[in-house]
Image (cartoon, rainbow, N blue to C red; front, top):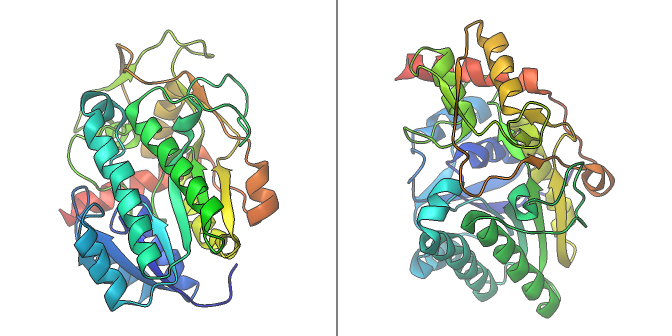
Length: 339
C-alpha cells in the first residue's frame, strides 16, 4: 500500500463504491476531494463518512461533463491523482438511451482527461466493468479474454479504456489503471454505508432486500433459459469493501506510466437463484422469485480470473457471498431506521 499521502480527486465519490473508497483513502492517509452531481446519491453520505473516518470530506456539486466545473476543482486543489467513478451504469437504461451513456460516460471521461492534462495531473484509476467481455464464454475470464460488449453501457466503458490507452501511448508521464470489476454488492460492516441510490434501482441486491423486508412481493428473475446450472445468469459477486481496498492499493501502480487493465473478482460464480437463497438465509425471511423475460443486453455468465490482481496489486477478495448478503441486510435495516 502506498506510503506517500496524496490529494485524490474522487469523481462520483458520494455514490455506492465511491463512498467506500473515500473512507479507505482517509484511513490510508490520503486526502480525498469529491465531485458529484448527486443524481444517484445524496450529500448526507458525508455525515456518515465523518462518523466512520473521523474526518470531514471536501466535496463539490458538479458534473464531469462540465469543463468549467472541473477546471475550478483543479484550480482550487493540488490534485495528485484521480479516481473516476462518475457515470451512468444501468444496462437497461443504456439500451433505451444510448446517446446519454456516450455523452456522460465517454464525454465526461474525455472532459476529465482534458482537465487533468491542463493542470499537470498524470494518474487515473478508472472504474471499468466486466461487461466489456460480453459473451466471452464460460469459465474464468482473464484480462486477455476477448471483449465483445453487448449493450451501450459496456461499449461506453470499453471506449473509455481505449481512450486511456491512447493517452498513455502519447503522454510519457501518464499512468492509468482500468479496474474491471465484476458485480459489487454488500455494504460497510458498520451499516453506515451501502447501496443507497434512488428508488427503483435496476440492481439486483436492492430488489432482493426489498423482497426480504416485505417491501416488494417478489424478485423478477430476468430469464431462466440461459445455459447455466439453473437457467439464471451467473455473476461473480464481490464485496464492495474488497473493491474499495483494491483502489487504494492501485495508487501504487498508477504512479508508473502506461495503461493497465486488471480484473477484480472472486473467481466464483453465483446464479440469481443462489443469490436469492443467500439473501433469504441472511435475512431469515423468504425471498420469493418469479421468472420474467430476459433483459436486453444481458449475458449468461461473467466470472473473473483474479490472478493478475494478486500478482500486481497484492489484492485478493476476502469476503464470500454469505458475508456480502449479511452486510447488505444490516445496512438495509439501518437505512430503514434512519429514514
